Image: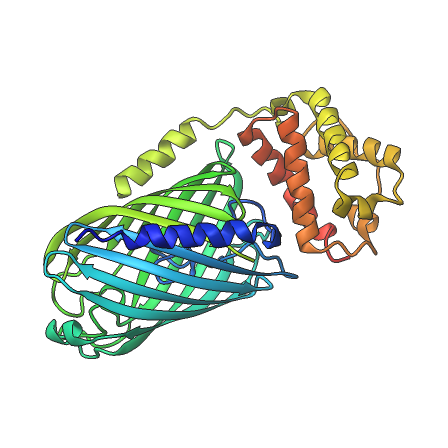
Length: 284
Length: 136
């Protein structure tokens, strides 16, 4: 039986919602400076949560975004659907669902991620110092069987805490706008939580560093790289993640990101690489 | 990954422009005037922005904005207008409307055929005035 890829259905749904509500979208930021929705649902880059909030709301506005992301690796495929809302460019809440397909072994792992982010300082474009935000991501595994089998200490839920700094420098590199982000995340999660939390190697919180750097070649095109450090609690050789991305931002209501993701060894399967595709739409 | 990032930065730094002023790079007084006139046209056709300008002296705004843009981009002008804080006091311009104004200013530069990198450099010298414009 040929199954219609879920991402196509999701994309269609996102496009429909975006274009049917186009005129209502908050527009109080410069185009290209609101960023994207990262894999766990927070406003960010692709793999890394940023200090920026998800939408184009200013301090007098609200915004709601929906997004869908697929990362298609050699032996696995991560499917994400999510929604986030940002209030007065100050507080962001998010919910995302992960379905991690085990292409080689069969079956999947599902988890839900709920996030909150609070902007502590600044404006990513206009303040002298970077915008700073603090946030958390609470992860609930729907079925802990696989997490337990690989030796996770906790196979039901866990919470990550992070502090992020993000800055856009206008005209910084040969006249092109540059953006960078640095995030410190305290976590016990194995492979984002898909393989549970903690393990034989380590069962306490560790601080991981994550970073992004990008250049906006026009108001509609951003290119960059990301890095996400990961713990190896299970002793399965869990690797740090990297990606190269290209984002197309035709309007403030919609953006598409295509990336090459290198996620290394996942649950013993080495060199997991593949295409990351994400569509993000601001519906309010 | 690290090597690629370093290479990317070096290549871009290599393209970095010379030390001429942004005023010269954008095309001098002729372009300053063109951008300001385009901006005024953008405001005239935008009901949301026009609201803030409906009681303004357009000729004075025209003249002082040319001086200010010339001065801020490093041109041979003196800004003889009022302090920015004073000009915007009591207007209570919110952040969303300010950013909308920036969008219109970008349109004005676009219509004057200012290149994307030069547009960014102009925005970078104008950006610090934001604190003297919003919520006053």
